[in-house]
Length: 385
Ligand code: SPD
Image (cartoon, rainbow, N blue to C red; front, side):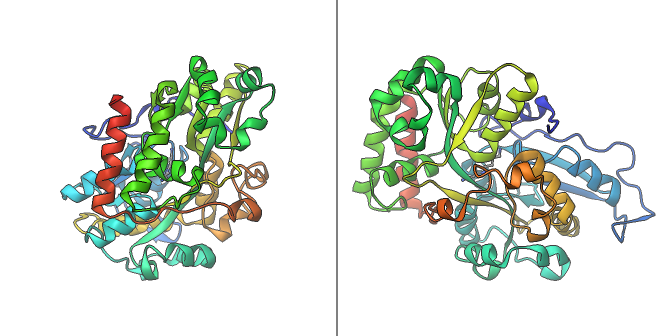
């Protein structure tokens, strides 16, 4: 069984105003040390400011990098693309590496937020899966600005016993009917229903369920998704994108629309706590989102060489495999896959089969007017107007 630090998820930016806190513990003592070569490279020292998703890195990744490189890392976390984007568009974020999801990155590339990568500084790019890189290049042409970190799906996380008690079995979890039919969701209100706090996922998911193009930019179509979400609003007990890992693990949420690896982490935390809570994750038969989170360097980054060093380090096969083993999200690193724990690489909820992958959809780059409609819809939903 994997050991996790239960407190790790607590250090998360909960609100847009939050300045960010550290997930992993920094290595102490030798932040500015120089001397022995590590991984074939001399210690360089200096600083690095990283802004990544919460619950998204193994506990030893940053401390090991600090020890090897002599670089002092400040590692802040967020739990929504909207949060990263507002910092990036405001400028002077202070970060040297950020990790937006590919469709957001595509829009930020267009806004001129990132510097093109000097690929000679990332020799471990050779480890990446050419097929995935081709797919990514649809939104980052020529893979010019970013490197994939992890990928995953968005689906239904469920408490096995609570769902069985309400519906007689867990078969209902294979369909979005469980979420979008009020007669189903209403049965779960008492045990806790959480949705991710992100219109950029929930609206496309609702549209896909309705048989519409999940990426439709037609205001009338988007309104249909909004109307559907409104019908189930009374049964939501929480809208949040990171607290749900703990609330699932403790048994206080029984259904989540959330991210694959987070739900597996919740399942593992409950197992470690031996509290009898059993969680499952389902990629629904009507299709679900597939996404890539991307490492990129803002144009105004101050510690560019250290950013390259860290990105190249993350692409070392063992480092990438350790991360995947810890966070239960796959990576696009072909050389790492054989090093990933077979319980993880063989788990179809984490690494979906080709048949399931064929039903997944990706998010398009959304223009500002559509984004405004998303935000309006979401605010109305959350405030109950
Ligand atoms: N706790 C880590 C969650 C990472 C989720 N990234 C998903 C973005 C999908 N749009």
